[in-house]
Image 1 (cartoon, rainbow, N blue to C red):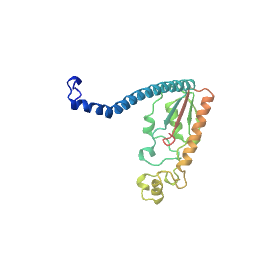
Image 2: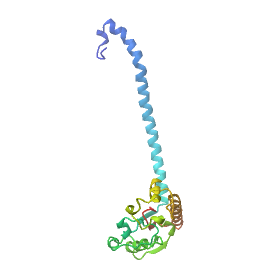
Image 3: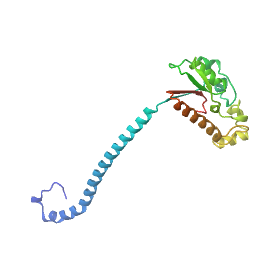
Image 4: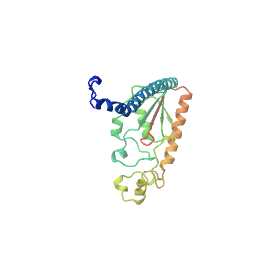
Length: 212
């Protein structure tokens, strides 16, 4: 039945079918109209709530704002050779030192670990800043794997088992991922709390790839 048929010119067959068509399609169009109105109403409410939430969060952030700067140390010979470095106290290489430049801001204090590569990086990037050692941010202890490359370890059953665990298992004579993460997160949380308590506007940390 064409929608363009005028009722004045409709045939008896059309007039007989029209009520049936109306009864069949009216619920559908009624449901569609209600759905559109409900969707619009819900979107309006969600938008208002989202705006309110963003405003509240913005106020909270601005009232307790602190910039946290996390830097990894510069390149070492072990990095270039793709050796597991971990707790080994490897200094920056000549190329690593040459690539570092002084930052465009000068913090009073920079947090480093007891491993010399972080102290050397901090001295180059933030000359004149006092260095505070937080050794719990040191790199993961890779135990027997340290100083070795994948090529040197790939046939080692202990190394293959560690890889199979997704790095979750403890390295032989070293750390496991859970213990490492717990140590680092504990230290980081303490540093942030202390910095906020003294009203610091910036917390600068030079540490390791794993700790970040």
